[in-house]
Length: 327
Figure (cartoon, helix red, strand yellow):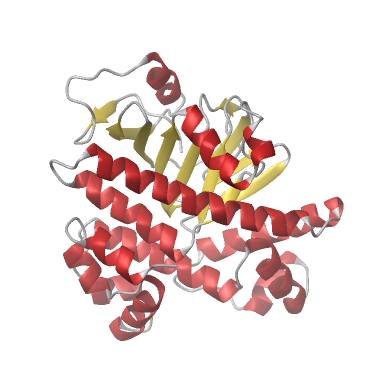
């Protein structure tokens, strides 16, 4: 995620509206990336960011000009802040606190595609207040966490939002209601994971475990089509297979096998949303044995088949997602 020299206003942005000084400052930090403002109103802004660069070393120190929620759709990058490094791929949501310094690397080819959500500060604090009133009192640093996992429900809600934004004549009320529905789901999951990690204690051990898991995630992401066996991963990382399996599940919030499958399926969903037609080729690209294996996994994850998702993307997907994925 790096910044863009151009901003393209699409449907959903107010006709004739101009980029504000806050917009210019925020976009200025995304060099060598394409930033597309897909929706803007008094209440919120939604940006589509595509960074295509490969930069395995830590980049320069950056600062976010606003409290920002970043949803990764494809690819990966790492974010380091406050001594903590997290690898961000389509399983993740990242939280950028205004003015907090961070460094980014892009350790694999292909870059990343992300959706950025910027809410009006008073609205964001109201969301935080729902889960942690004390955190909402810290207006300059309301996020006590830097990342969270995106559930199948939130990932599909994310894509239904993008489908809605790509449709002409979309009512602002519908868009903004969808965004706040998504943010509420994301915040609930973030606090659930954060409180579980905090209650385990042991700061030094927690740092070692976090570093181990982030290294494992990178090796998985680099080899999604043909991932190494658990024993090979453990040998590469200097630990036992049992230890890696146990720590990964505890720190990442889901078993390694589910993490791998979600990486594959979320990449598939992004490609389908962009118009991919060859389901068999897509299945083989992502390491599935055949079309049937891929379709069954996709249906288990998103409660619909890949062909149905492709047909309904941009039309009745929002309605179907709500019906199939009610909590």
